[in-house]
Image 1 (cartoon, helix red, strand yellow):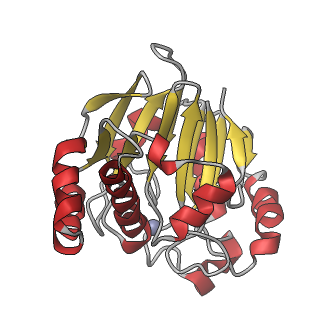
Image 2 (cartoon, rainbow, N blue to C red):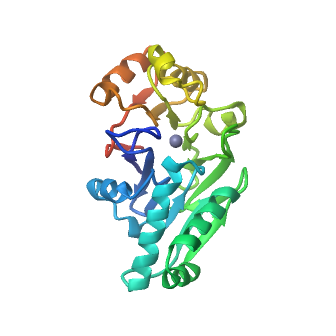
Image 3 (tube, rainbow, N blue to C red):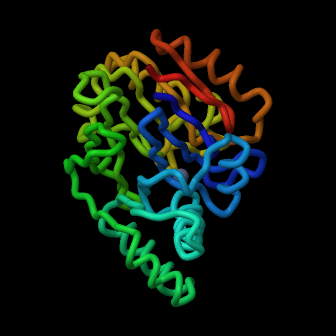
Length: 269
Ligand SMILES: [Zn+2]
């Protein structure tokens, strides 16, 4: 399985795209969040990802930098279904609030023919904390990350069907106690890192409920994570970001550390 980073930035970035990604292998693909707009199409195109071939989509929470791109994804697949270019079912997963919002955006914005198509071919799947679904033939368990800002879910996924090795995504906030059991000792942890530790006072990572690179790495080290991917970062120093974050992170995390740029692909297994 591979991780295709479509975007790696926090909400207000201008030099890269907002954090969203695709997990893919020969069985299919799973898209997580859509970023903040129809730039999702350009990112997918550049990454060689054909959105309409993906059947499973998950939205972590309602913030603009995560859900608005997914409106475009929903529009694209319903349009293609309506045109007869694709057939079958598309599934959108999320907790009650994001599913309600996604549907109400569509109902308020899409024309009737697309809405009719959506009703026929799109399944909205509301997940509760701890629910497990089968995606790409693997068990995926969604969990409430315990956000104080907006209800947000992360997930943990088997890297191979029935296997014990897992990938866990904690959304765009620091992992909290309630998410610990999903992240402990995992092969891959996807965790946000807003900025370098020395830049906290400038970027206000804590005020916005985010971590610094140092803090994310300390968490992963404490949990015995094997590989850590940092994302959802500022882009002020985009050219320098990878080098600087890796240099800081390696002081606190002894496993495999990854600071991807947009469109980077990471082989997971
Ligand atoms: Zn975000």
